Image (tube, rainbow, N blue to C red; front, top):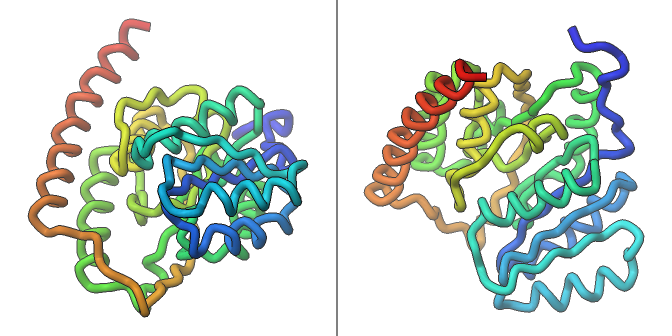
Length: 249
């Protein structure tokens, strides 16, 4: 059991929003996040639409709460997350809540993450969409179930929704997990390594908002299956390396 002194300071949690070409939704996401009175770190990952102009306008109004970090070119979600993680460690935040910029996460549920942190003081929280799958396309639901089961088996921890970007990561996780990936495989990499390090991982239910007028599944059955099994192969290499290094310490 963790001592009271180890409790996460809720006032020192930041919200991290990686963004690439999300000009349609990012302003609304940020404005909803402001009600929590937490620092909001936005990593603009080389957007080529008018996202930079929107962020610049918002920064003039909310300069005390918005931190905007720009990548000159698009580097991928994993690199955007790592930039945000490094900033969070540098600023010594007690943890971060990651949320997507596309408006598909209910910002009102941040309070549920904060309540779970206060109640259980976990190292990592994953928002799971599987308590409410209404509107989730079948192919996405199937792929998420399959990948979550496989990653949970390899990690040795129950992770309900490994593809969810709605998460809490404590400062301990940010400091101690060394990441090797650069894109969307960074999120499952975090979960795998957190499992091997026996960190406390909690799952909480979240809703997902699908913009049905413009929704197109980005799942390519062939390409994404190949990518996933490449990740599975890499995970066994990481696991072998991880436990070898652990024994030598």
